[in-house]
Amino acid sequence: MEMKVTVEDVSPVQKRLKVEIPAQKVDEYINQTINRLKKSVAIPGFRKGKVPRSIIEREYGAEIKSEVLQSLIENSIGDAIKQSQVTMLLEPQLDSSSDVEPGKPFEYSVLMDIEPEIKVPDFRKFELVRPKVEVTDEEIDEQLEALRNQFGTVEIVDEQRPLKEGDIAIIDYTAFIDGEEVEELANEDYFVEVGKGNFNETFEKGLIGMEKGEEREIEVSYPDDALNKLVAGKTVTYKVTLKNIQKRNLPEIDDEFAKRFGIGLETVDDLRNKLKEHILKDKEEAAESVLRNQLFDKLLEDADFPVPERLIEKKLDQMIDNIAGHMHERGVNLEQAGIDEERLREKMRDDAIRQVKIELLLDKIAEQEKVEIPTEELKKYNDYVDEHYKEMNVDKAQFQAAVFESVLPKLRAKQTLDYILENVTIKEEEEASENVSESPKDEEKEESSKD
Image (cartoon, rainbow, N blue to C red; front, side, top):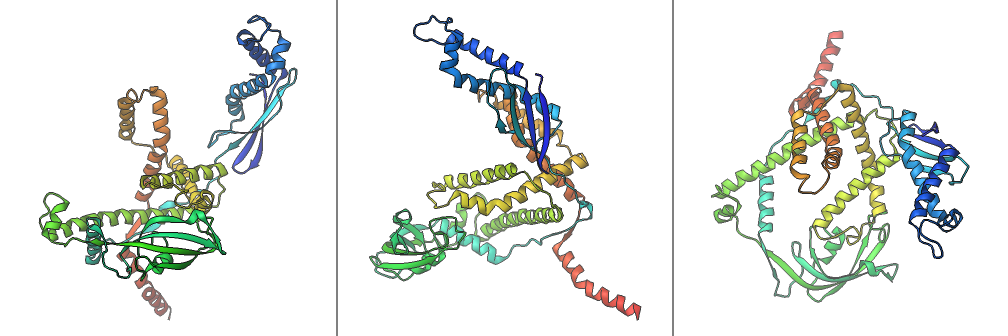
């Protein structure tokens, strides 16, 4: 398709692609659309296929223009992008378009998000410190207590006594802001495990000491950036009725308790050793996470480059979807939890920018260092496609493209991260602290040698 293509800079990470399609080509598309409609439309008083062009244009003018506009853009955008020689990070976004008029050229423009200029730091000079990993008896005790709670039973407290920390309060409550009731914040038969902080720490402390049937007012002040916009920056007066109290009956930690947790566990010591293994594994994974974050911090120290806004928004969408998915597993959604999505996006924005920058840096390093995904990893996902595309009743090529679009960037990023960590200096926490403590002595030696 003959057309005129021009590119102009919008920002360091965005360009505007302008396309002009000649009038002759516009007329061709208009004629094709009208001829197709002429064969299919049925208008009273005319035989099918014999409706005059003027009638079709009058009755279907808006539809014709819309279809021609869409066809002109769809059929030209690919060649226009190739002609522009611009490499994009995301699909182009329609910016503007002219009207479709017979005998006139058609113009439109799209915004193209591009990769920023990134200066890769000399990561081979980085020094990282791996945290020391050890498991204490106190940590094992905490895990044992968590297991006790998990396998405890819950029962109603029969006697009339005050609510205490650790109890489960069953309450009705209403909420008032500046004396006005806020119905959205009210609840009935609500369960609060006092002291867990799942509702609000101030609110839960205010429940302590209540007895069944008692009513009490509890004031809670919320920060300006609270996720629930109804309470953000405000003081809420909750009017609470304690309807009932439940308590947990916890099992004894003995050998019988230990046997519940798997074959080979016969004694409490066996269970403690098993818990120690799990805690150690979790801590080792946490230590690797700390190491990666140290690396990311160093990579980002001089990473003063802009990122496309749409990349940030896309990352925020992923982050929100993850949170919503985890909440869905617990049977609630953002609205039910009183979380305003826009406020949540605002809070998470800096983290989203950080993640996008890290991804762009890793991608740049992968390109610079020629990091490749191992053949065996690619084969694993090719095998997955071969095994599942038929049962999912989808086109194999499309399924493979979808799988690889989702998986390959993550695989490449992991491979790049491993490559960087292999090429930096990693000290253990004890070794690093020894070096720090020795440095003043070294300075003293230097001073004395000068004397």
